Amino acid sequence: MIISSLGQGLLWVPLAIGVFITFRILDIPDLTTEGSFPFGAAVAVSLMIKGQSALMASLVGFLAGCLAGLITGILDTKLHIPSLLAGILTMTGLYSINMHIMGKSNVPLLSQKVLTEYLPDNWNLDIQTIVLGLIVIGIVVLVLYAMFKTRLGLSLMATGNNKAMSAANGINTDGMIIFGYAISNGLIALSGALVAQSNGYADIGMGIGTIVIGLASVLVGEIFLRGRGILTRLVAMVVGAIIYRLLLTAAMSLGFPADDLKILSAIILVVVICAPIIQNRIRTKRQLKKYLEQMEEPADEGTTSKASTEGLLSRD
Amino acid sequence: MKVLQVKHLQKVFFPGTDNERHVLKNINLEVNKGDFISVIGNNGAGKSTLLNTIAGTLSADAGEIDLADHEVSKKSVAYRSRWMSRVFQDPKMGTAGDLTVFQNLVLAQSHTKTSSLKWYQRKNDLDKYRDLLKTLNMGLENFLNTQVKYLSGGQRQALSLLMATMSKPELLLLDEHTAALDPKTSQEVMRITDKIILHEQLTTMMITHKMSDALKYGNRLIMVQDGQIKLDVRGTEKRNLNKEQLLAAFE
Image (cartoon, rainbow over all chains, first blue to last red; front, side):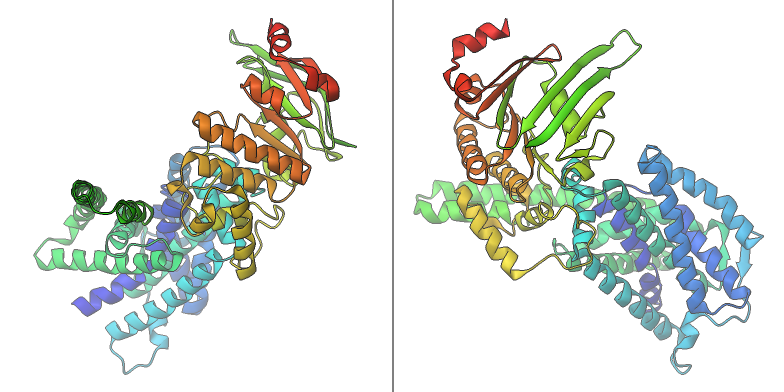
């Protein structure tokens, strides 16, 4: 069970990383997610049924997601629609598009060869899923890591952090935001394509709640793995998506019916949003107490002041 | 040689409403290479609007802005940044708080290569930046890998200043850049500003509310009042100007 949820968790990692890019790097809560996830699934499954290879179908699914992100980005930056609403508009529009692509609300894969079947036959399905997930995530994390090390990646981070300063330093901030939306939703759609292949079908409703899943994965990951290096932060998303999936599996094994998973997801999100705040408050209080105690001891001043600056600078 | 030429610049806020305000009234201004202009004026006189319109954060309603022989009145802030840098009033505005000092410095250079796919971290840059930071004398050279949000306001503003000047822009805009700092830090930042401007021979427009700074620094002084340039003195005339004369001009 744990092994199988590990594999499932890996398939949801691109979603977590996609949400991370908009939510953390660009500082935008992007609801396009709920439309681009099934969009990726719909495109991939439909292409496979039409005879395309699973690899090609997944790639086109990724590109389809990029296109969805591009549209939200244009609505946000060029038409000045507030980002939350821009995401909702694209998401709503995508519902119709997904229905047109699939033709009906649920399209099963028949005998088409999915990505896991490219791996050796003698491995069992769970191992196949894990290996496939690791390969996809390896590529995604490496490419993103390299991207964030370039000037382009730096410009993207700067835009999310301080738009006025970025523009004053020559960055095309609108372009950066659109680019961020595009890769984010591309990854989310890729996740949709992978999950659909694993489930064996694409469903019009499979996007519902994905933004909550994505955000929860981001926050869970950040609780378990702190750090500000970009590689650490990306790996944290991998960890977050897997742990989140394990939490859901644990809940199911406690006997919660599948219909209750959405409310569980919501509750988990509330908890993981609040947990770091409380954690932080406790830590600050403890540090403060330690610091004040140190002040009372008439130790040599030099070391005391040095230690306190270090505490301030290291954040954690 | 002219660095900036502003012709018949107009800016009207809320046109057609009861709150209509004509803030810039047909402003003409020439800034020559080597000018270090102090811009003074009452609150609401239009000096910040003038600076924002030149920088591109506000669009001009009418008129022309020629920056280093490029007509830029319809161009974006990013495009204008090829020739122009700016230090904001708020120390938080000029730097990206979540990024490190090093990353901020990288962003400040080669404004035309912001989408480059080359890796930005290079060893010799690190040494170069460390030397540059040392010249500020604020201990910043030890914080290259510290996120900017952990620096003090003075350090952050000094960093903004370094970022704005390191690429030797044709025109430097300073928007009351010492106003948010305490008196001592403000003086220190002003001193560094003067040093950098003279050393790099940067053409500068500096808005200030401090009469003493306006008199002490720069080789030209402009007073903006009611959306027009009321006073424009330079050279010896500027040097001989005193506080009383300036206050009288405010009336």
